[in-house]
Length: 126
Image 1 (cartoon, rainbow, N blue to C red):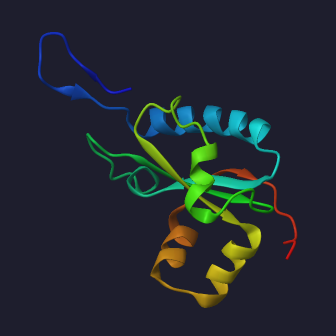
Image 2 (image 1 turned 90 degrees about the vertical axis):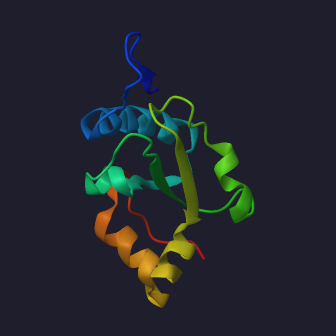
């Protein structure tokens, strides 16, 4: 987690290299805990390398099939081991493919900038 120096009010915030390494370690454990996982990556300021003090890690996970409604899926993911605040968006393969078909700025940004740590490409089960 970010720490404050004992003699200063300046925060030392994890840089992209540190955040990426921690994310990849966390991703390996997440893949073990979530066998339904197909792809896992991060996007946003750390992916673009324009992060700063206070930046969070935006994570996207693609799973085979949902275990819960979209609004509750992120609750199944323990993000506490990551060195910065984080949030995860969890989509099914079918939802991800539908987003790509429909287009839109958000999916275009995700496609362009996501740094993938886990990619087990499989055909969608609809």
